[in-house]
Image 1 (cartoon, rainbow, N blue to C red):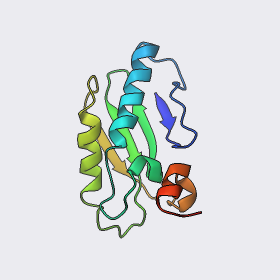
Image 2 (cartoon, helix red, strand yellow; image 1 turned 45 degrees about the horizontal axis):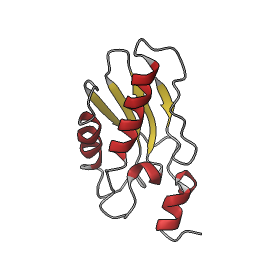
Image 3 (cartoon, helix red, strand yellow; image 1 turned 90 degrees about the vertical axis):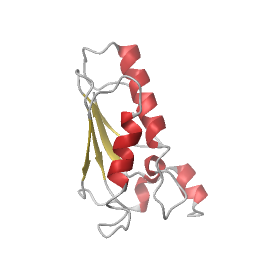
Length: 125
């Protein structure tokens, strides 16, 4: 399953046919998103999913999970710890295999990627 993570508009439907049954794939996706919502940037009181830091989550047929994420800036003080936190959170989901987290900076993160809930929490209206 390959899915662009869009907090406010996320769809949990797979983009192509997987050997994982649809109900199981939907559960895995929902549980992964739930796990990602437990990870917070230590400097910002909003989870990284709602901040729009998760760009892509791929669940392979063998249940390996690849996550593309970004940071609010390339100089983010949490750059060393956040990918490990994401890997640990996703690895805790029952039924996933090995997890690989890749930090990307293209496209660069900006506030437009944040969900409405994140904007409200940070008073960015």
